[in-house]
Image 1 (tube, rainbow over the protein chains, first blue to last red):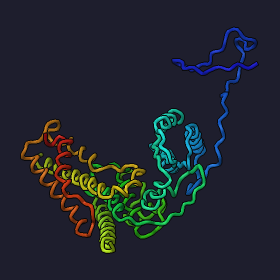
Image 2 (image 1 turned 90 degrees about the vertical axis):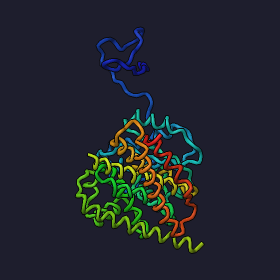
Image 3 (image 1 turned 120 degrees about the vertical axis):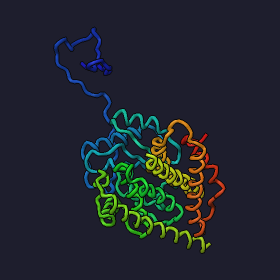
Image 4 (image 1 turned 60 degrees about the vertical axis):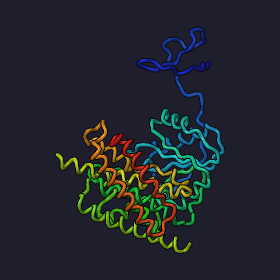
Length: 264
Length: 114
């Protein structure tokens, strides 16, 4: 004898109502309650630069993929990336890139992810061309994708396309740190530092990954990423080094713009 | 106290100037910027400027004309200087005629002037 019921919300406890006219299930009997819908298995995920992921986070990634799959679209690929994949539970949200040729309505997906995992999702919807162009021109983007979980296998090999004007625009954001050291939080400082260092490495045609950027931060600024995030850095020495790197990077970009203009 | 206010005004000017330079540069590379939309926005100068504005009295009313005029003049000159560095290196498509309008808009948005 099986009865199908629906879980209803209660004030103190939720419950499953069953009809009074039934065979079996006498008052006082113990029963097993389990979900009727079996979770659809997700195809094997592909891990890039992620050596280890806590089982709980892995389950969340699967859940996110399942939710996205529920909304029909011709997905080219789906990526989960960002601080969610870092060790520990210090993330604020989960970053998701959905590559598809048509626009998707992000709101129901975000809402469902929030409802089922309790985590806010930051979703970006890109066409394949936009995705490839991003990988070619934006070091920060390359860094993010060097550590990700992808729904489908993808070949992380793109030619580097130095667009100095775009790099100038991206670098300019990091200027805010020099004037506003005292009012910025640790994570805001880290974002600005990371942006600048990633651009600097990119200009030197170095590999951009989370590790390489953090290593370079430590080497060139004399302070680790964790200390910056915790806002535990000495202002004077840090800013001196920071300004030096900023100016050096800016000069390289200006020279690139100048050479580009001469060639035209 | 007055000195502190002046310092906050200077920081406000610096951040608003950066925000405007950023906007003009963004317009100059608009075609290439398709790829930019996936960038999670970094803390932007305009947001920081708003934090400083909240510390400049009067907070909810426009500043006296003299102060507003001084702030506008400084922002225009800073923005132009920053853009001129790029123009001198051959950067094309930078539209200096946008500066005045964007400065006015920012000052209205932050209730520096009416």
